[in-house]
Image (cartoon, helix red, strand yellow):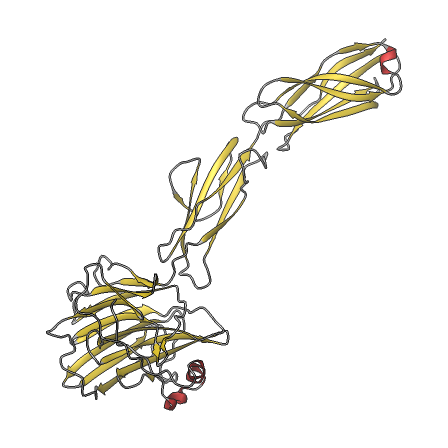
Length: 454
């Protein structure tokens, strides 16, 4: 494991920064003291190293470094009732040495609220908060930080908020007798600070991107920097990405859960929820409040090419259509793939009754007349229909009616026998039928045939 000497310590004198640091002091019981963490093991694997409190990139050199700089956007931290902390900084020393000179920002939580502060530290001296009246930090602010060794024990620490235009710069001396020049390492780090009790809980920040990273004016790759992941026993707490194509950018994320997608306009199966018109499918991605945010939502239609969702899309062809959809977050996590269906039946069924001739005695009170009806529904079809049969007089008066509520048709012509309770006199009647399918398509005109009662 790559252990790191990197504390953040708040002194009582920093109460001058008002609410922000008062809240921070309350979180940590008044003082966040420097931890005592062993120096890192010498050497690393080519795949990077791990640390209990650092994630990011670090370069070490016996010849030393003189400057480091990076830009990041301050992430929002998830509000918690308990104290949680996440710091983002650049620095010299600290990886393999007993001193560190650094500057950056921090988000932390208490009592269900989130707070943000800019700070610098000349470890082993305590962290110093930057007066918010000079440089206040809030989520979404774009910040550029740099540390430069100017010779002997002197360093220039700078922080600029590109969003507000506020800047801070200070020349500080490293007073520790353990300091050796030149600085032996340079780092760009996301950290969970430590106290005398150990490493503090990490505030969930989702993802932070570092760009414009430079060590001694060159890229991280040129400086031989390698990645560090923050870990607990058995799990990664914050993961560091590979360098970007410019060798000067990377991300650190504590988000390992894929986003979710909700859909409207889709059915759970290919046999239910048939519609008689085109359907607009809407997809909406969402991420946990402490996640990195949804980067994109994707879908396929009927096994076709993957498409990026940007607006509702219409499915208008008849038949059953399969939609698969998922989302990817900014941290690169892919959510689970879900499946839904759009089932469209755009054709109405038709029905034609069979002409009948019956005796008077078969249609007296309490009798049931079975009327054969030929039902056809062209494919693609929802496969079900309801047939209404009416018996009318020559004047159009309905004297009997009945339905067969579910008739399986499946594109073929079938004969359904519809039962009607009847009491009829001798004479000539009309049989009128109308079919409606489960999607709501209704037969345009009535099927008709003659019924003769002798």
